[in-house]
Amino acid sequence: MRIFKKILFIFILLFCALPLYAEVIEGYGIDYNNKDAYTVAKNKFALTNVKTAHDEFEEMINTSSNKDFILLDIAIVLSEYGFFDLSDKIFSKIDDYDISKNYIEDIRHFYYPAKRMKESDLLFLAEAYSNIMYNNYAQEAVIDVINNTDLIKEKSDYVFYILALGYYEIKDIEQSKNYISIALSLNPDNVNYKILKTKILLEDKNKKQALNLFEEIKREDFKIVEFQNKISALEQYVLYKTEKNEKLKDYHLGYYYFLDGKTNFAQKVLLNAISNNKKINKEIYALLALSYLTISDNNAEDNAKKSLKIGESFNGLYSLGLVQLKKEQFKLGLNTLNKAKKYEHGTHNAERLIALVYRITGKHKKALKIWRNLIKKVPEIYESYYYIAIDTQTDTENLLKKSLSYNVNFSPAYYKLSEIYIERENFELAKKYLYNAHYIDENDFRYYYYLSQLEFAQGNDTLAENYLKICTRLEPNYQAIIDREKGFEK
Image (cartoon, rainbow, N blue to C red; front, top):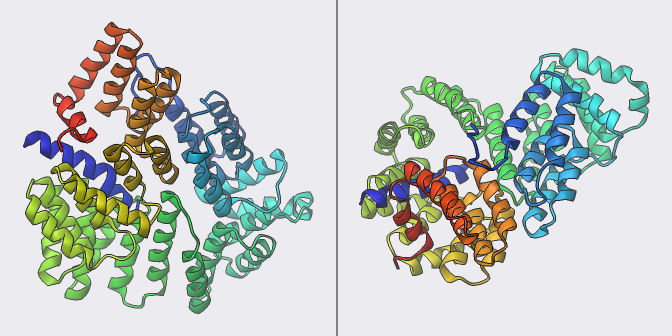
Protein backbone atom coordinates (compact mmCIF):
# COMPACT_ATOMS: atom_id res chain seq x y z
CA MET A 1 0.00 0.00 0.00
CA ARG A 2 2.95 2.36 0.50
CA ILE A 3 3.66 2.25 -3.26
CA PHE A 4 -0.03 2.82 -3.90
CA LYS A 5 -0.02 5.93 -1.73
CA LYS A 6 3.08 7.29 -3.45
CA ILE A 7 1.56 6.78 -6.90
CA LEU A 8 -1.62 8.53 -5.86
CA PHE A 9 0.23 11.47 -4.35
CA ILE A 10 2.35 11.98 -7.47
CA PHE A 11 -0.66 11.84 -9.77
CA ILE A 12 -2.72 14.13 -7.55
CA LEU A 13 0.06 16.66 -7.44
CA LEU A 14 0.50 16.58 -11.21
CA PHE A 15 -3.05 16.46 -12.42
CA CYS A 16 -5.43 17.75 -9.76
CA ALA A 17 -3.89 20.40 -7.55
CA LEU A 18 -2.28 22.40 -10.37
CA PRO A 19 -5.20 22.51 -12.83
CA LEU A 20 -7.23 24.27 -10.16
CA TYR A 21 -5.88 27.56 -11.07
CA ALA A 22 -3.30 27.11 -11.92
CA GLU A 23 17.08 24.44 -9.80
CA VAL A 24 18.65 22.90 -12.63
CA ILE A 25 21.03 20.09 -11.73
CA GLU A 26 23.48 18.60 -14.15
CA GLY A 27 21.70 16.74 -16.92
CA TYR A 28 24.03 13.74 -16.62
CA GLY A 29 25.50 14.26 -20.05
CA ILE A 30 22.65 16.28 -21.53
CA ASP A 31 23.38 19.94 -22.26
CA TYR A 32 20.11 21.60 -21.38
CA ASN A 33 20.60 24.95 -19.68
CA ASN A 34 17.59 26.88 -20.99
CA LYS A 35 16.05 27.17 -17.53
CA ASP A 36 19.16 28.86 -16.13
CA ALA A 37 19.42 31.18 -19.14
CA TYR A 38 15.71 32.00 -18.92
CA THR A 39 15.95 32.95 -15.25
CA VAL A 40 19.01 35.14 -15.82
CA ALA A 41 17.39 36.93 -18.77
CA LYS A 42 14.17 37.55 -16.79
CA ASN A 43 16.18 39.06 -13.93
CA LYS A 44 18.00 41.35 -16.35
CA PHE A 45 14.70 42.49 -17.85
CA ALA A 46 13.36 43.29 -14.38
CA LEU A 47 16.48 45.39 -13.73
CA THR A 48 15.83 47.36 -16.97
CA ASN A 49 18.80 45.78 -18.72
CA VAL A 50 16.37 45.27 -21.56
CA LYS A 51 18.65 45.04 -24.62
CA THR A 52 20.87 42.45 -22.91
CA ALA A 53 17.80 40.48 -21.79
CA HIS A 54 16.44 40.55 -25.36
CA ASP A 55 19.74 39.30 -26.78
CA GLU A 56 19.97 36.50 -24.21
CA PHE A 57 16.39 35.39 -24.85
CA GLU A 58 17.17 35.38 -28.57
CA GLU A 59 20.32 33.30 -28.09
CA MET A 60 18.34 30.81 -26.00
CA ILE A 61 15.76 30.51 -28.78
CA ASN A 62 18.40 30.18 -31.51
CA THR A 63 20.17 27.33 -29.70
CA SER A 64 17.02 25.40 -28.82
CA SER A 65 15.75 22.34 -30.60
CA ASN A 66 12.89 22.70 -33.09
CA LYS A 67 10.95 20.28 -30.90
CA ASP A 68 11.52 22.33 -27.73
CA PHE A 69 7.88 22.96 -26.89
CA ILE A 70 8.74 24.52 -23.55
CA LEU A 71 9.60 27.60 -25.60
CA LEU A 72 5.85 28.01 -26.12
CA ASP A 73 5.55 28.62 -22.39
CA ILE A 74 8.36 31.17 -22.58
CA ALA A 75 6.58 32.89 -25.49
CA ILE A 76 3.85 33.95 -23.06
CA VAL A 77 6.34 35.88 -20.92
CA LEU A 78 8.10 37.35 -23.96
CA SER A 79 4.76 38.63 -25.28
CA GLU A 80 3.95 40.13 -21.90
CA TYR A 81 7.30 41.98 -22.05
CA GLY A 82 6.52 43.23 -25.56
CA PHE A 83 9.19 41.11 -27.27
CA PHE A 84 6.82 40.10 -30.05
CA ASP A 85 9.70 39.59 -32.49
CA LEU A 86 11.06 36.85 -30.20
CA SER A 87 7.74 35.10 -29.66
CA ASP A 88 7.31 35.10 -33.46
CA LYS A 89 10.73 33.49 -33.73
CA ILE A 90 9.61 30.78 -31.30
CA PHE A 91 6.47 30.13 -33.33
CA SER A 92 8.57 29.75 -36.49
CA LYS A 93 10.80 27.13 -34.82
CA ILE A 94 8.01 24.84 -33.64
CA ASP A 95 7.16 22.67 -36.61
CA ASP A 96 4.57 20.43 -34.94
CA TYR A 97 1.39 22.45 -35.34
CA ASP A 98 -0.70 19.81 -33.53
CA ILE A 99 0.97 20.84 -30.28
CA SER A 100 1.66 24.51 -30.94
CA LYS A 101 -1.57 25.73 -32.54
CA ASN A 102 -3.53 26.53 -29.36
CA TYR A 103 -0.59 28.35 -27.82
CA ILE A 104 0.12 30.43 -30.93
CA GLU A 105 -3.54 31.40 -31.36
CA ASP A 106 -4.12 32.19 -27.68
CA ILE A 107 -0.90 34.19 -27.20
CA ARG A 108 -1.59 36.31 -30.27
CA HIS A 109 -5.20 36.89 -29.26
CA PHE A 110 -4.30 37.81 -25.70
CA TYR A 111 -1.22 40.03 -26.22
CA TYR A 112 -0.38 40.90 -29.80
CA PRO A 113 -0.69 44.45 -31.16
CA ALA A 114 -2.57 45.08 -34.40
CA LYS A 115 0.32 47.07 -35.84
CA ARG A 116 3.81 45.58 -35.91
CA MET A 117 6.80 47.71 -34.92
CA LYS A 118 10.52 47.89 -35.55
CA GLU A 119 12.80 46.06 -33.12
CA SER A 120 14.21 49.38 -31.87
CA ASP A 121 10.70 50.58 -30.99
CA LEU A 122 9.89 47.29 -29.25
CA LEU A 123 13.05 47.61 -27.14
CA PHE A 124 12.17 51.20 -26.22
CA LEU A 125 8.66 50.20 -25.12
CA ALA A 126 9.95 47.09 -23.33
CA GLU A 127 12.20 49.35 -21.26
CA ALA A 128 9.17 51.50 -20.44
CA TYR A 129 7.24 48.36 -19.41
CA SER A 130 10.11 47.24 -17.17
CA ASN A 131 10.23 50.64 -15.48
CA ILE A 132 6.46 50.68 -14.98
CA MET A 133 6.01 47.13 -13.69
CA TYR A 134 9.28 46.34 -11.91
CA ASN A 135 11.09 49.53 -10.93
CA ASN A 136 8.50 52.07 -9.72
CA TYR A 137 9.48 54.50 -12.47
CA ALA A 138 6.10 54.75 -14.15
CA GLN A 139 6.14 58.56 -14.18
CA GLU A 140 9.52 58.66 -15.90
CA ALA A 141 8.48 55.94 -18.36
CA VAL A 142 5.35 57.86 -19.38
CA ILE A 143 7.34 61.06 -19.97
CA ASP A 144 9.89 59.17 -22.09
CA VAL A 145 7.15 57.69 -24.29
CA ILE A 146 5.26 60.99 -24.67
CA ASN A 147 8.50 62.76 -25.66
CA ASN A 148 9.20 60.16 -28.36
CA THR A 149 7.15 62.04 -30.94
CA ASP A 150 8.18 59.81 -33.86
CA LEU A 151 6.84 56.77 -32.01
CA ILE A 152 3.59 58.54 -31.09
CA LYS A 153 3.09 59.49 -34.74
CA GLU A 154 3.18 55.79 -35.65
CA LYS A 155 -0.22 55.45 -33.95
CA SER A 156 0.47 51.92 -32.79
CA ASP A 157 -2.10 50.48 -30.41
CA TYR A 158 0.71 49.06 -28.27
CA VAL A 159 2.22 52.50 -27.65
CA PHE A 160 -1.11 53.73 -26.30
CA TYR A 161 -1.44 50.59 -24.16
CA ILE A 162 1.96 51.29 -22.54
CA LEU A 163 0.87 54.89 -21.85
CA ALA A 164 -2.40 53.67 -20.35
CA LEU A 165 -0.52 51.19 -18.16
CA GLY A 166 1.91 53.86 -16.98
CA TYR A 167 -0.82 56.34 -16.11
CA TYR A 168 -2.76 53.58 -14.35
CA GLU A 169 0.25 52.80 -12.15
CA ILE A 170 0.66 56.49 -11.16
CA LYS A 171 -3.10 56.71 -10.47
CA ASP A 172 -3.87 59.21 -13.22
CA ILE A 173 -7.10 57.45 -14.11
CA GLU A 174 -8.41 60.03 -16.58
CA GLN A 175 -5.31 59.87 -18.75
CA SER A 176 -5.17 56.09 -18.40
CA LYS A 177 -8.80 55.78 -19.47
CA ASN A 178 -8.15 58.03 -22.47
CA TYR A 179 -5.15 56.06 -23.73
CA ILE A 180 -6.64 52.59 -23.24
CA SER A 181 -9.70 53.72 -25.22
CA ILE A 182 -7.40 54.73 -28.09
CA ALA A 183 -5.54 51.41 -27.89
CA LEU A 184 -8.80 49.44 -28.03
CA SER A 185 -10.17 51.56 -30.87
CA LEU A 186 -7.11 50.48 -32.89
CA ASN A 187 -7.16 46.86 -31.65
CA PRO A 188 -10.60 45.99 -30.24
CA ASP A 189 -9.90 42.25 -29.87
CA ASN A 190 -6.80 42.46 -27.64
CA VAL A 191 -7.72 40.80 -24.32
CA ASN A 192 -4.77 42.24 -22.41
CA TYR A 193 -6.04 45.74 -23.24
CA LYS A 194 -9.54 44.76 -22.12
CA ILE A 195 -8.20 43.53 -18.78
CA LEU A 196 -6.40 46.82 -18.18
CA LYS A 197 -9.53 48.77 -19.12
CA THR A 198 -11.55 46.68 -16.64
CA LYS A 199 -9.12 47.61 -13.86
CA ILE A 200 -9.17 51.27 -14.91
CA LEU A 201 -12.98 51.34 -14.87
CA LEU A 202 -12.95 49.81 -11.38
CA GLU A 203 -10.60 52.57 -10.17
CA ASP A 204 -12.90 55.10 -11.86
CA LYS A 205 -15.81 53.73 -9.77
CA ASN A 206 -17.57 52.73 -12.98
CA LYS A 207 -18.74 49.39 -11.66
CA LYS A 208 -21.40 48.68 -14.29
CA GLN A 209 -19.10 49.19 -17.30
CA ALA A 210 -16.34 47.20 -15.60
CA LEU A 211 -18.66 44.24 -14.97
CA ASN A 212 -19.99 44.36 -18.54
CA LEU A 213 -16.46 44.34 -19.93
CA PHE A 214 -15.48 41.50 -17.63
CA GLU A 215 -18.45 39.44 -18.83
CA GLU A 216 -17.20 40.03 -22.38
CA ILE A 217 -13.72 38.81 -21.37
CA LYS A 218 -15.20 35.70 -19.74
CA ARG A 219 -16.75 34.72 -23.05
CA GLU A 220 -13.32 34.56 -24.71
CA ASP A 221 -12.56 30.99 -25.75
CA PHE A 222 -9.01 30.43 -24.49
CA LYS A 223 -7.72 26.90 -24.84
CA ILE A 224 -4.54 26.90 -22.75
CA VAL A 225 -4.33 26.73 -18.97
CA GLU A 226 -2.28 29.90 -18.48
CA PHE A 227 -4.88 32.27 -19.95
CA GLN A 228 -7.81 30.48 -18.34
CA ASN A 229 -6.08 31.09 -14.99
CA LYS A 230 -5.50 34.78 -15.77
CA ILE A 231 -9.21 35.27 -16.37
CA SER A 232 -10.09 33.37 -13.17
CA ALA A 233 -7.73 35.65 -11.24
CA LEU A 234 -9.26 38.73 -12.86
CA GLU A 235 -12.72 37.58 -11.75
CA GLN A 236 -11.59 37.53 -8.12
CA TYR A 237 -9.99 40.97 -8.54
CA VAL A 238 -13.26 42.36 -9.92
CA LEU A 239 -15.17 40.86 -7.00
CA TYR A 240 -12.62 42.33 -4.58
CA LYS A 241 -13.01 45.82 -6.04
CA THR A 242 -16.81 45.71 -6.21
CA GLU A 243 -17.59 44.00 -2.87
CA LYS A 244 -18.76 46.29 -0.04
CA ASN A 245 -18.36 43.90 2.90
CA GLU A 246 -14.77 44.32 4.14
CA LYS A 247 -14.32 40.67 5.13
CA LEU A 248 -15.64 39.45 1.79
CA LYS A 249 -13.33 41.94 0.08
CA ASP A 250 -10.42 40.30 1.91
CA TYR A 251 -11.67 36.86 0.89
CA HIS A 252 -11.69 37.82 -2.79
CA LEU A 253 -8.30 39.52 -2.47
CA GLY A 254 -6.91 36.35 -0.89
CA TYR A 255 -8.42 34.30 -3.70
CA TYR A 256 -6.85 36.64 -6.26
CA TYR A 257 -3.42 36.20 -4.67
CA PHE A 258 -3.89 32.43 -4.55
CA LEU A 259 -4.78 32.22 -8.24
CA ASP A 260 -1.87 34.54 -9.02
CA GLY A 261 0.52 32.07 -7.36
CA LYS A 262 1.19 34.24 -4.27
CA THR A 263 0.16 31.67 -1.66
CA ASN A 264 1.87 33.35 1.30
CA PHE A 265 0.12 36.67 0.60
CA ALA A 266 -3.17 34.81 0.18
CA GLN A 267 -2.89 33.01 3.52
CA LYS A 268 -1.93 36.20 5.36
CA VAL A 269 -4.94 38.09 3.98
CA LEU A 270 -7.32 35.17 4.65
CA LEU A 271 -6.18 34.64 8.24
CA ASN A 272 -6.69 38.34 8.95
CA ALA A 273 -10.19 38.14 7.46
CA ILE A 274 -11.51 35.56 9.96
CA SER A 275 -14.28 37.14 12.07
CA ASN A 276 -17.54 36.28 13.82
CA ASN A 277 -19.34 35.93 10.49
CA LYS A 278 -19.77 32.18 10.07
CA LYS A 279 -20.98 32.39 6.47
CA ILE A 280 -17.83 34.19 5.35
CA ASN A 281 -15.61 32.07 7.61
CA LYS A 282 -16.88 28.96 5.84
CA GLU A 283 -15.44 30.22 2.55
CA ILE A 284 -12.24 31.52 4.16
CA TYR A 285 -11.44 28.22 5.88
CA ALA A 286 -12.22 26.31 2.67
CA LEU A 287 -9.87 28.48 0.63
CA LEU A 288 -7.19 28.19 3.32
CA ALA A 289 -7.55 24.41 3.07
CA LEU A 290 -7.06 24.61 -0.67
CA SER A 291 -3.97 26.78 -0.25
CA TYR A 292 -2.38 24.26 2.13
CA LEU A 293 -2.89 21.19 -0.10
CA THR A 294 0.66 21.03 -1.44
CA ILE A 295 2.23 22.34 1.78
CA SER A 296 0.65 20.60 4.77
CA ASP A 297 -1.96 17.83 4.86
CA ASN A 298 -2.71 18.57 8.52
CA ASN A 299 -3.39 22.27 7.92
CA ALA A 300 -5.44 21.46 4.82
CA GLU A 301 -7.56 18.93 6.71
CA ASP A 302 -8.02 21.12 9.79
CA ASN A 303 -9.21 24.09 7.75
CA ALA A 304 -11.45 21.94 5.54
CA LYS A 305 -13.15 20.48 8.65
CA LYS A 306 -13.58 23.96 10.16
CA SER A 307 -15.24 25.06 6.94
CA LEU A 308 -17.49 21.99 6.63
CA LYS A 309 -18.56 22.29 10.25
CA ILE A 310 -20.22 25.55 9.22
CA GLY A 311 -21.52 24.30 5.87
CA GLU A 312 -20.63 22.50 2.64
CA SER A 313 -18.72 24.12 -0.24
CA PHE A 314 -16.69 22.88 -3.18
CA ASN A 315 -13.31 24.05 -1.87
CA GLY A 316 -13.95 22.54 1.56
CA LEU A 317 -15.15 19.18 0.24
CA TYR A 318 -12.50 18.97 -2.50
CA SER A 319 -9.68 19.73 -0.07
CA LEU A 320 -10.91 17.18 2.47
CA GLY A 321 -11.47 14.56 -0.23
CA LEU A 322 -7.96 14.97 -1.54
CA VAL A 323 -6.44 14.61 1.93
CA GLN A 324 -8.54 11.49 2.53
CA LEU A 325 -7.27 9.94 -0.68
CA LYS A 326 -3.68 10.68 0.25
CA LYS A 327 -4.39 8.79 3.49
CA GLU A 328 -5.64 5.86 1.36
CA GLN A 329 -9.20 6.36 2.64
CA PHE A 330 -10.48 5.73 -0.88
CA LYS A 331 -14.13 4.97 -0.20
CA LEU A 332 -14.44 7.96 2.13
CA GLY A 333 -12.52 10.20 -0.27
CA LEU A 334 -14.63 9.27 -3.29
CA ASN A 335 -17.80 9.88 -1.28
CA THR A 336 -16.52 13.34 -0.31
CA LEU A 337 -15.56 14.16 -3.91
CA ASN A 338 -18.97 13.08 -5.21
CA LYS A 339 -20.48 15.59 -2.80
CA ALA A 340 -18.03 18.23 -4.04
CA LYS A 341 -19.24 17.73 -7.63
CA LYS A 342 -22.62 19.21 -6.68
CA TYR A 343 -21.01 22.54 -5.82
CA GLU A 344 -18.55 22.77 -8.72
CA HIS A 345 -19.17 24.88 -11.80
CA GLY A 346 -17.10 24.65 -14.96
CA THR A 347 -13.72 23.26 -13.91
CA HIS A 348 -14.70 19.58 -13.28
CA ASN A 349 -11.75 19.10 -10.91
CA ALA A 350 -13.67 16.70 -8.67
CA GLU A 351 -14.50 14.48 -11.66
CA ARG A 352 -10.88 14.58 -12.82
CA LEU A 353 -9.72 13.35 -9.44
CA ILE A 354 -12.46 10.70 -9.23
CA ALA A 355 -11.43 9.34 -12.64
CA LEU A 356 -7.80 9.29 -11.57
CA VAL A 357 -8.56 7.32 -8.41
CA TYR A 358 -10.73 4.84 -10.33
CA ARG A 359 -7.81 4.23 -12.66
CA ILE A 360 -5.25 3.82 -9.88
CA THR A 361 -7.54 1.41 -8.04
CA GLY A 362 -7.91 -0.73 -11.20
CA LYS A 363 -11.37 0.46 -12.34
CA HIS A 364 -10.20 1.46 -15.82
CA LYS A 365 -13.58 1.25 -17.54
CA LYS A 366 -15.16 3.63 -15.03
CA ALA A 367 -12.23 6.00 -15.39
CA LEU A 368 -12.36 5.94 -19.20
CA LYS A 369 -16.08 6.67 -19.16
CA ILE A 370 -15.45 9.81 -17.09
CA TRP A 371 -12.55 10.98 -19.28
CA ARG A 372 -14.63 10.55 -22.44
CA ASN A 373 -17.58 12.41 -20.94
CA LEU A 374 -15.27 15.21 -19.79
CA ILE A 375 -13.93 15.69 -23.33
CA LYS A 376 -17.50 16.16 -24.57
CA LYS A 377 -18.15 18.78 -21.89
CA VAL A 378 -14.79 20.57 -21.87
CA PRO A 379 -12.41 19.73 -24.74
CA GLU A 380 -9.46 21.48 -23.05
CA ILE A 381 -9.28 19.04 -20.10
CA TYR A 382 -5.91 17.81 -21.24
CA GLU A 383 -5.52 14.75 -18.97
CA SER A 384 -8.50 13.11 -20.71
CA TYR A 385 -6.60 12.67 -23.97
CA TYR A 386 -3.58 11.25 -22.15
CA TYR A 387 -5.48 8.55 -20.27
CA ILE A 388 -7.62 7.58 -23.24
CA ALA A 389 -4.42 7.29 -25.29
CA ILE A 390 -2.52 5.03 -22.88
CA ASP A 391 -5.49 2.91 -21.77
CA THR A 392 -6.98 2.24 -25.22
CA GLN A 393 -3.78 2.34 -27.30
CA THR A 394 -5.89 4.01 -30.00
CA ASP A 395 -4.59 7.00 -31.97
CA THR A 396 -2.03 7.30 -29.17
CA GLU A 397 0.43 9.74 -30.71
CA ASN A 398 -2.24 12.24 -31.83
CA LEU A 399 -4.07 12.12 -28.50
CA LEU A 400 -0.85 12.73 -26.56
CA LYS A 401 -0.05 15.73 -28.74
CA LYS A 402 -3.58 17.01 -28.24
CA SER A 403 -3.06 16.79 -24.49
CA LEU A 404 0.10 18.91 -24.81
CA SER A 405 -1.66 21.40 -27.08
CA TYR A 406 -3.73 22.44 -24.05
CA ASN A 407 -0.93 22.24 -21.49
CA VAL A 408 2.61 22.19 -22.80
CA ASN A 409 3.92 21.54 -19.26
CA PHE A 410 2.13 18.20 -18.91
CA SER A 411 5.21 16.00 -18.53
CA PRO A 412 3.55 12.50 -18.58
CA ALA A 413 2.66 13.03 -22.25
CA TYR A 414 6.32 13.73 -23.06
CA TYR A 415 7.37 10.50 -21.37
CA LYS A 416 4.83 8.48 -23.30
CA LEU A 417 5.81 10.13 -26.59
CA SER A 418 9.47 9.41 -25.89
CA GLU A 419 8.57 5.77 -25.26
CA ILE A 420 6.74 5.61 -28.59
CA TYR A 421 9.74 7.01 -30.47
CA ILE A 422 12.16 4.71 -28.63
CA GLU A 423 10.10 1.77 -29.91
CA ARG A 424 10.25 3.23 -33.42
CA GLU A 425 14.02 3.72 -33.03
CA ASN A 426 13.65 7.44 -33.69
CA PHE A 427 16.12 8.17 -30.90
CA GLU A 428 16.72 11.85 -31.66
CA LEU A 429 13.02 12.67 -31.39
CA ALA A 430 12.67 10.55 -28.26
CA LYS A 431 15.55 12.49 -26.68
CA LYS A 432 13.99 15.85 -27.58
CA TYR A 433 10.73 14.93 -25.85
CA LEU A 434 12.71 13.83 -22.81
CA TYR A 435 14.49 17.20 -22.75
CA ASN A 436 11.14 18.94 -22.27
CA ALA A 437 10.19 16.66 -19.38
CA HIS A 438 13.59 17.33 -17.78
CA TYR A 439 12.97 21.07 -18.08
CA ILE A 440 9.66 20.76 -16.22
CA ASP A 441 11.09 18.68 -13.35
CA GLU A 442 14.72 17.65 -13.40
CA ASN A 443 14.24 15.55 -10.24
CA ASP A 444 11.48 13.34 -11.65
CA PHE A 445 12.68 9.74 -11.51
CA ARG A 446 10.72 9.02 -14.68
CA TYR A 447 13.14 11.12 -16.69
CA TYR A 448 16.04 8.87 -15.75
CA TYR A 449 13.96 5.73 -16.24
CA TYR A 450 13.03 6.65 -19.81
CA LEU A 451 16.54 7.93 -20.48
CA SER A 452 17.84 4.50 -19.45
CA GLN A 453 15.37 2.86 -21.86
CA LEU A 454 16.63 5.15 -24.62
CA GLU A 455 20.24 4.10 -23.98
CA PHE A 456 19.39 0.41 -23.67
CA ALA A 457 17.65 0.62 -27.06
CA GLN A 458 20.81 2.07 -28.58
CA GLY A 459 23.03 -0.62 -27.03
CA ASN A 460 24.62 1.73 -24.49
CA ASP A 461 24.06 -0.63 -21.56
CA THR A 462 26.63 0.87 -19.17
CA LEU A 463 25.24 4.38 -19.59
CA ALA A 464 21.70 3.02 -19.29
CA GLU A 465 22.55 1.26 -16.01
CA ASN A 466 23.98 4.51 -14.64
CA TYR A 467 20.74 6.34 -15.43
CA LEU A 468 18.78 3.50 -13.83
CA LYS A 469 20.86 3.91 -10.65
CA ILE A 470 19.89 7.58 -10.51
CA CYS A 471 16.25 6.59 -11.06
CA THR A 472 16.49 4.07 -8.19
CA ARG A 473 18.08 6.63 -5.90
CA LEU A 474 15.23 9.07 -6.56
CA GLU A 475 12.52 6.39 -6.29
CA PRO A 476 13.36 2.86 -5.05
CA ASN A 477 9.92 1.55 -6.11
CA TYR A 478 10.09 3.06 -9.59
CA GLN A 479 9.23 -0.13 -11.51
CA ALA A 480 5.96 -0.73 -9.65
CA ILE A 481 4.94 2.90 -10.20
CA ILE A 482 5.85 2.85 -13.90
CA ASP A 483 3.94 -0.42 -14.41
CA ARG A 484 0.85 0.90 -12.70
CA GLU A 485 0.96 4.16 -14.69
CA LYS A 486 1.16 2.15 -17.92
CA GLY A 487 -1.95 0.28 -16.83
CA PHE A 488 -0.38 -3.16 -16.49
CA GLU A 489 -2.56 -3.98 -13.47
CA LYS A 490 -6.09 -3.99 -14.87
